[in-house]
Image (cartoon, rainbow, N blue to C red; front, top):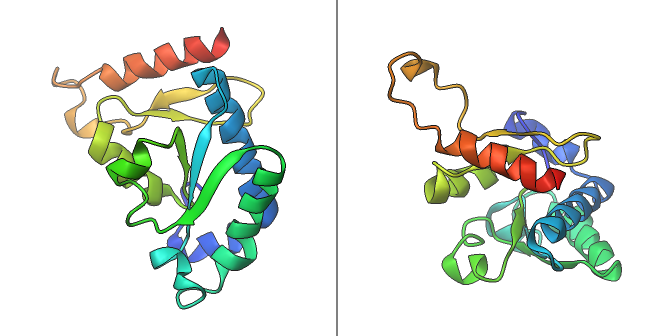
Length: 164
């Protein structure tokens, strides 16, 4: 939902329309990649997905939940909001093609823990295909001959697949 912004700004950037737009973009991209209807899991913003208003400012009830309902009404297979601390357990990963996360590290921590060498950054919703490595520039090891190009290769392969 959001990119490189401080955590304090995330709630103000969440709207029902933005969440729905992200769900729709992800569903379309995943259907294109998988060749079938995508199964999406949407994470809540707050611990325990807000625990019915106990945590946060009701973002799950006011914004995220209604956006999921809008997606379901459009025929998109979206579930949630799931608590972000358990959303990435194997039982949920097995039934999910993509996770919709509310802020940068909510999605990148599990992604990098599970698939650091293969992770690819994709920007959806642009008029062009944009992929890149997902681990940054690695200036700390530049020119030492120790960098792993796996993520770069995966980014090129995914761009080619999206282009076909």
